[in-house]
Length: 287
Image (cartoon, rainbow, N blue to C red; front, top):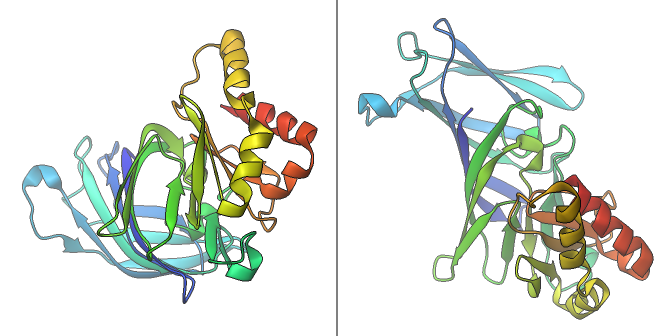
């Protein structure tokens, strides 16, 4: 797996993500005829097709597939590859069109469950093998790739992802993301809601709902940049580039998650400045 691209529309009214996934694959064996990905019963596959860019092929070839029960936390998605198309060293693009709703990786919160109680919010939590319900993937830390994403949301919503670069088109309400460092599937993370930010330093900022932002900024102060510097003195340069933090509502199922470039932290931790500082240091150490 060389690269993956997500193109998704978020529908808060029906709590649904729909769109497509593109996998850039380079076979290493000449006899590959089946691609097996991790999936989940909450993920509905609409179609799968294949194309070989180096052949100048314009029209993709539709592929057959089947979904088989695997464990209580997922399914296997077996995709039949066309004979003669797959050759060692030649890139193949697999496009999977799908819809996903309330799988274990995706947490839809009604506005009443957010801190501000004004708009709904959604976040993903992929650790350790949950992102197979976010998108079909090789759901193992042994497989890493770069990724890009295009996310479409309703007006007033801000999208963040665990990516090294991002941009936003206000006219189209489209957020674009790019992660230049290879990461395993469980570290592809997303949050969307009514979020605002404040800069903490040249490479760090804090994101939170508007009602929490001033408190979050006060609690964090200069601790993120300070402890990044301490970590670099001990272990060398911080490789992810950005070290942003987003505070999530108390429904977040764990204290924190060390997603690259964007650490997720439960907002209730701000009740204890000491506990918050310990967790900031802990998450920086993950990087």
